[in-house]
Image (cartoon, rainbow, N blue to C red):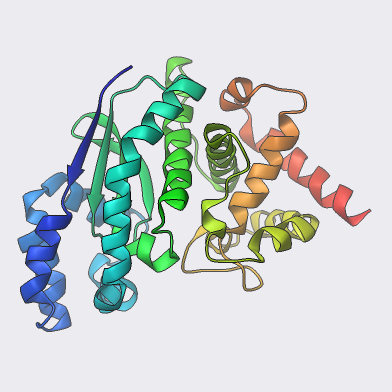
Length: 292
């Protein structure tokens, strides 16, 4: 099995925050970049660039959505940090056993500016998962069992990217690609866990039940959003919701992949070429089956 590496920036964040928590919000924003994350310039650049690609000002996003909540979320960030130190490598070993994921993998624990509890990407030339403690705390995903699910989901993404790369297939973009990749990663989370696993449902007793009951309506809403060029962040983003329920697109994508598995293996699904054709058809079927 290939090696995993863990980069833990949280002690440096705590040292920075000991002084910065008493400063103005603008000084905290600047210090986050110039004092704390300046020690990991690639990590800083990835976050700034991600917001820029979406046409957003990273400083404004941090000011409105993230930094004002750091103090109140600190206990949760500390719990998540300790649990990640315990579960990252065992979860990686399990994914290797179940999915045959052989890539060298870097885990990075950091406090960021709202770009996700988990982020499957590259870092220092390796496949990597970046864990944003600020988002983990915001979502209430700080328990070990939930974090195992999150890790499984992100490894699912990396496994998917690896399968496509080996087959010479490019990554896509757009709403159907997002539904596809998130749905497949969510199925991988369950495969790695050996049972149904929904890390995003950790703080809700009703989320999964609501999604199952409303899956036909959800499918119809997704189809309509795509047709009119609407903002599909309402189905995936942690700062958005559909009818009061966040991240419902993960359930819809999971259900689409589950249905495809009735005729295809997970490996075959990972190599679908015409993603829009296949997933638009299966989502239409979900909408029709549930409305009939």
